[in-house]
Image 1 (cartoon, rainbow over the protein chains, first blue to last red):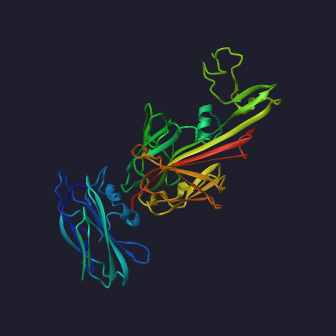
Image 2: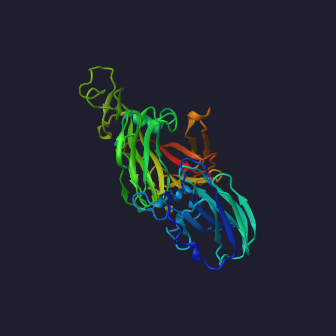
Image 3: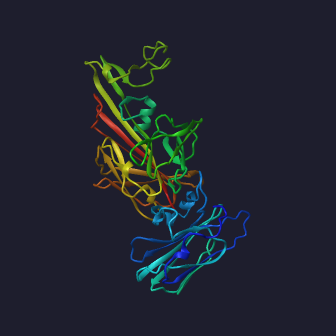
Amino acid sequence: MKRSPPLTAGLAAAPASAGTVSITIPQLKVAEYHRPYVAAWVEPAGGGASRTLFVWYDIKKTGAEPGTKWLADLRTWWRKGGRSLKQPTDGISGATRAPGTHKVALPANLKPGQYTLYVEAAREAGGREIVSLPLAIPASTGSASGKTELGAVTLSR
Amino acid sequence: MHMKTRLIAAAALIALSAPGLAHRGWLLPSATIFSGSSDWVTVDAAASNDLFFPDHRPMPTANIKVWAPDGSEGKIANAATGSVRSTFDVQLDKPGTWKIGTVQSGVGGSFKVDGVEYRLGGRRGPGGPGGPGAPANPNAPRFVSSVDEIPANATDIQIIESSGRNEIFATAGEPTTTVFQPTNKGLEMQPITHPAELVQGEPAQFRFLVDGKPAPNLKVTIIPGGKRYRDGDGAFEVTTGADGIARVDFPEAGMFWLNTSLADKSPSAPKATGRRMSYTATLEVMAP
């Protein structure tokens, strides 16, 4: 999970939005800091297939140890859907992001209904955390917060 | 060692047939879930009492087999055998679920000729009992090396066919199930919950088969690794239902050693009077 250039592929191309999710990556005072891998996905509240909204990883790293090698560290996302996506995926895969708040548009074609939104972060030489909150489409508002690897996760219209 | 019947040394026979009395054979993979395109899994292999602390004997690597997700045979690399454990690597260069482990079988036992006891199997190398160079001891046990040497007038024939499997699974990318296809020979485990889907708090199911048929009422022992860091060994037991399915609720995340064994009177080896079978796997359970 080495430092990567700013996001090039992906979310900017998303269609008109059903709402916005803001994800805060906290500033951490640690001796060795690497930007976290972060993935977000939604699952229908009544069960069903998950849908990945985005995954931020070391998308440009290739060779014997490509950036995909550590995607499994996002262990829940990997099991719920990450492992069935080919990387990189247009509109989903992007580079890792710096500490701060990042806004991501929810896909406009998300069918109305009740969902759970999950955001999972895993950091090289650091920890892993998952934050979830209920999501109603048409988009609801709400907020949840992580304690270690993730700050506030906020839904807004 | 392939599914060919072989004579096996007495110690190995005990190890296969009476796990309660022997050290536990185990394989410990560095990880079981991989997201890279050609990741390496590195494996420790040993026999010891406590899991997964190597302190007794290394497991020979010559018998390790690799089943690739596409059904082809894979290979191990960088095998090395230390004093108390072996180690080897497998490169997961094909997507899907791999199986790595051993399949062993053999026969051993005893019979009498004119009241004198003979043993089948055993060590017959130079200096070994019954072999060339052995001390001339009239009371030393007598040995034959194959069932073909059992004479027609033998009595009290007790020949046990022993077989055992010891397996681990590693999944690169999406899980597949090709390597779960049973051979329908001996005692096998067919995962219902995929080994890449084992999560603390989510009950898992494994089907046990004997000669391809469900094995009911089989006691399956599950032991978590890391005994040195707690008081109890943490072992627990589940029993298979009529459908051969064991339902396991893993109490924590980590590596678990699963073992079961079974004896019956349905050997496939010629002249065998019974058989003992064992199955062992190391499974990784993820935190939720």
